[in-house]
Image 1 (cartoon, rainbow, N blue to C red):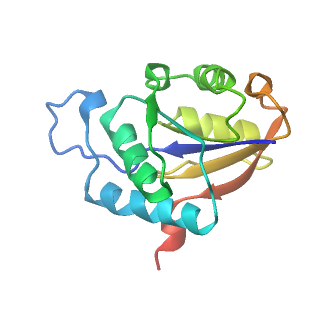
Image 2 (cartoon, rainbow, N blue to C red; image 1 turned 60 degrees about the vertical axis):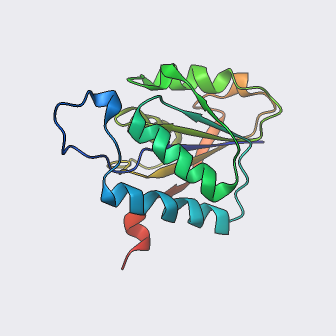
Image 3 (cartoon, rainbow, N blue to C red; image 1 turned 120 degrees about the vertical axis):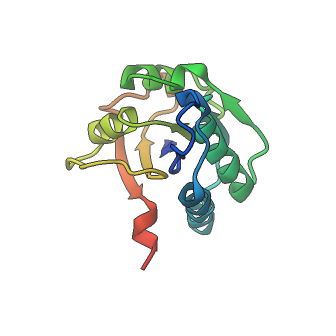
Length: 163
């Protein structure tokens, strides 16, 4: 079995409108939510083997915060994950080495929202910032990862954990 966690980047800042989209940082809420969500996964016993991230600053910073919280040493930046279509993300996942059992992919909406609905039995309205979609697939090789081989087994987002 293979497990992938699609993590939408935490909330980003729009305070500097002169920044290119790829360079936008996390805002205060994003810097609060990302450690919370990493801690929740840690408490659930999640042990990642590999982190892949979009090169966008907000996605990569989210990945770095999760890496610190989940004791991951390295993050592989995948340029194809920025401004990606769902098929682009699937191709990246299908190219992962088979020794990896638990994969994290950090990226963006609307792509992750579309992917979540492809793996879900019910229609989701949104994948909010720092939302996590866990997909489990009964496969031995990532090259076999497709909509019909996996299903969403968890959907977590920050507002679930604030009173």
